[in-house]
Amino acid sequence: MGALRSLSAAREMLSLGEDAYLELASLALHRAHELEGGEAPIHAFLSLVEEPPRFRAELSPAGGAAASRLAGVPIAVKDNICTLGLPTTCGSRLLEGYVSPYAATAVRRLEESGAWVIGKTNLDEFGMGSSTENSAFGPTRNPADRKRVPGGSSGGSAAAVAAGVVPAALGSSTGGSIRQPAAMCGVVGVKPTYGRVSRYGLVAFASSLDHVGVFARSVPDAAAILGVVVGVDRRDATSRPRDPGPVSTSTAGEPSEALRGRSIGVPAEYFGDELDDGVRQVAERALDTIGEAGARLIPVSLPSTATALSCYYVVAPAEASANLARFDGVRYGRRATGGRTLSETYLRSRGEGFGDEVKRRILLGTHVLSARQYEAYYLRALELRRHVHEDFRRAFRTVDALFAPTTPTVAFRLGEKRATPTEMYTADIFTVAANLAGIPAMTIPIGNQGGMPVGGQLMCAAWEEEKMLGIAAALETCLEYVHPLAGEA
Ligand code: GLN
Image (cartoon, rainbow, N blue to C red; front, side, top):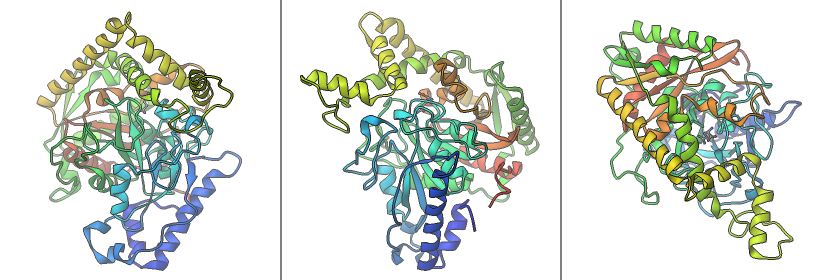
């Protein structure tokens, strides 16, 4: 057995008891180390545990307890989500070596279900980027083609799952950082409704847009992980006091039945000129499959799509400039030496600790919030954000879900977009709207183009994760996607 590709494969192995648990754990760790070495390392991880936690018989799947749903399963966690024992660096020099005194709620819930964190994954510094090249500790490479980026900012989590180190991983999304890298690496990525998964322990980037979500190899696996991490948390003020209920993808009869009679909206704005022809072809074939499975395809329009990206790049930096003010070299992480006054220490610590993109966002954010610019930029962006909400609300009055490509292109080459930030920003053009509206959205692999995976995106109305996952599971069954690395061990 080489790569670890599914929860059921892990569970089957784990049902054999302690020896199997140790074998599985060392396999995952071995594979994780393998990715860090060689000439063009994938570099999915920023830290790894030295050994797996001790085997606990009461957590074995044979016990059958609900608390053991993920017993013994190794998972990876993006390095902006707090864990006990391993550092939480956010891919930043400023937090190099920082170990959180508490674990994020999502991590704690996974651990209580028996899963264990194998390591922390690479990311664009503080989640700011679309390629994982903005990590202060070097980029992650795409397992399907090491000359290409894995997407970002959760590129390490996407790569770890795509390379078969772990069957699932946690990531975060502010503007698309789960769906975009999942699409580029050929795995499933889910961003839930805003407030459905606690943000407690997620280092804040832009609080009104930040979400914790999951990566997995299949829709049922993603649903299983999501089912464990969702739920009200009094430690997160934006966690909604609403019972989320179970998250299940099971449907009566054939899984593909979940598509019959559904109305699937196809937003014209997501099939415009930005879309690469190869990606368009794969997306159109997926639409044919959806139609053949008995769903009705309904053309819809989301006019706010054209301005959503600009809106995002005002709101997100504005919130980031406030959130990142806490990193002053005094309270967390690294402190610069040689400052003669307190403010000089602040300035030096931030100057040395933050990378270029983070500095760019802070400058942009403080500019749009400044007294003279506030109305022209920030208030205008909030108005545009309302249009995004309204567009989705209108669409979901007539359709069950929306289907669109997840990204305008397949994974690009390392270095290709680094020099032009605005070009990098367009990699999120199809994902930011769901973050601005807080609706659930996910991607599943729908085909390959020139040897690289293409993702198809599904979006539903707020709190309709279950419907979205059911439709996604049906589509996954119909498409029978084969990952470019499927032939390897
Ligand atoms: N790529 C987007 C940005 O740079 C989104 C990042 C994210 O979702 N964390 O802001």
